[in-house]
Image: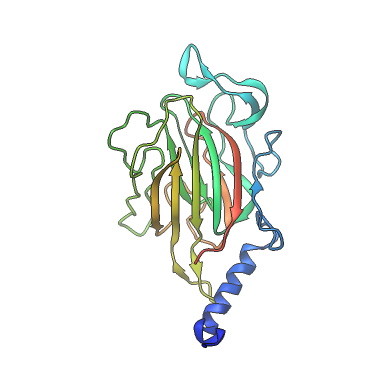
Length: 251
């Protein structure tokens, strides 16, 4: 029987240990002793999100405005995270940071609105009112958005394999398995970030899609083993609820 050293080269072990030490740093979304789901929005307040939080606030519900279906009506209370009455404010970054992760995200947009969820603050799964779009592109809901940075040419992004969008004002969900980029012991990137699986409203829309660099409007253009979740808040009205992350160990 081969020994562990024969099966896994020492350099690989060292790189994995370095990666794990970074993933479970003080700012990690979980601790190594308790790799359980971390709820990012408690439904009560904005605790767990970095300042500045701009006009993000908590509401009980966000039905469409009867006079303008491009807007929400914010009902006082708790349970829903929404980007303010105007529907345009700062992007929201989680205090904790993640590496390989499973995520559940529920969201709602009014007619024509736009947002996005950035894993590690860098790699976007697009949110858009794409109800009724027959041939979705990378900029439609569930798309993995393109890059727009040097060097050229840009990564073109990846459209969802099927348009699973619901009508404006309906609550929708993403369930995502994300693999963080890999780095060797010297800090050199040796494997790109990967969306192992993205499920939109119960339908698989991506599997094993590598993202070679941060996408447009990312918080940072460098790449790291860990980073915060970012909710885009400056492109139009959007609401979120039931946000959680669970660390996983992916090959």
